[in-house]
Length: 118
Image (cartoon, rainbow, N blue to C red):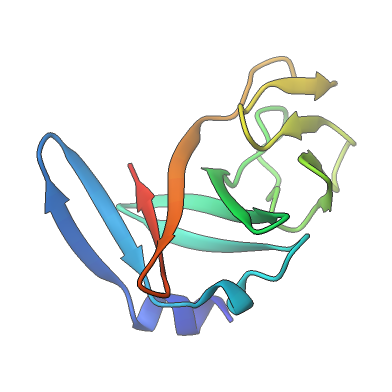
């Protein structure tokens, strides 16, 4: 699934920010699901929480395990390695051992395509 996302990757310039336009429709990121993508050299996770998209660094700040491989429950992602939990809407640590938040990025669906501002 990640290969499909990356094959259809486009970049849109806008002011001081860069918005990354990804090809999948919302069905590619199912409600309650997550995918991992490379954007501008960053590995990001995109979560679908009740139809709203949230993007964040796909690396737990504790030991750098992939958060997209973890479990999403509501707006909380749990790292599969050591159980750290983060709020995907803010990046805030909800439970350790991680102490640093993850960086979040604005994500939205436009014309059937996922866009992430980095």
